[in-house]
Length: 364
Ligand SMILES: Nc1ncnc2c1ncn2[C@@H]1O[C@H](COP(=O)(O)OP(=O)(O)OP(=O)(O)O)[C@@H](O)[C@H]1O
Ligand SMILES: [Mg+2]
Image: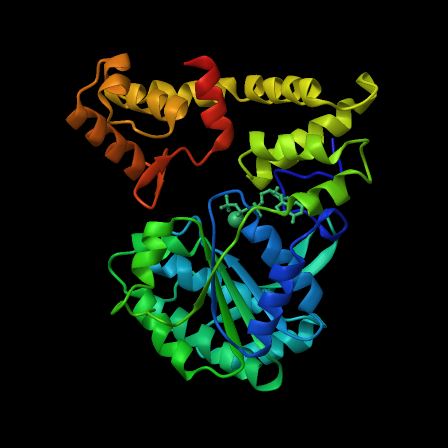
């Protein structure tokens, strides 16, 4: 059931709220053709922010969005980029095809038809092309497009390029980025340590983008939006925010369920919110149980203690509680970190999926 609180799909314009400061900051950077690295913990709202930014600016800019989450090879990256550029062209199919065929040296394009929407589109045929050909055609086209209109190119889940070992995509990007005028690159990602190393001193992308860390939504913004649809107090919104540790997705999930069940109660209080949260955790039980079951015994202990205590994990008292040694605790945390079940900020471990953490506290 769709409600004004989407939590699994990108919030469309009518259900998108807050983020005014971030939008205006991004617009300033874009108008100066500055590049941006937009990062945050997972599920904070990066993709949603950029998609809604693009809705707002697409009259004035050519906007290109690619999500590279699934790339396995460098060619996958090239192909996504080329198709992103192809799709960014608006207008009648015939003239776009003609234009693109002039921009591309090697790539052929073909019309597509979506039987569900009845819409015509264009697709680049990238199968037999090498990475170099894909990239050359992509940037050739980009530079041509940027001659008539400023371009914004967003690459979501950018940390994935670190998994491509045989081609130095970052070095290649740097080369083209330095040549480009009137193009703003926005890199989005959530794995801080990988992103840090991609943009670190002496790395190819060093100083190539201004970092912006996306914080949780403002409580005031959540309240002002939510009260339009549900009868809720600011204090209860604050309570939801704390329960969710500021994670946008979990806040949205809770508000979504409150909205659906709002007729069950006279007014929405903390007890009702707790009940809603329990139903969310129950609905995720199988998923989290399955994740937890593949942990080794020591990893289970470490995860449980982290969920329960968050800090001082190496104190005698806490270690004794689960009968785990200090070295085992350290290596289990390292393993969980490398598998991304846990994250680290300023040397302190935490569980980035807040619902998983709450589930662990309740069930382990
Ligand atoms: N400003 C907003 N207004 C309304 N809903 C939002 C907003 N920001 C995020 N959301 C909702 O929260 C959910 C998570 O947001 P989103 O997927 O954009 O986060 P993300 O930071 O890109 O996450 P990930 O790191 O997992 O890719 C989405 O379903 C989205 O609809
Ligand atoms: Mg995202």
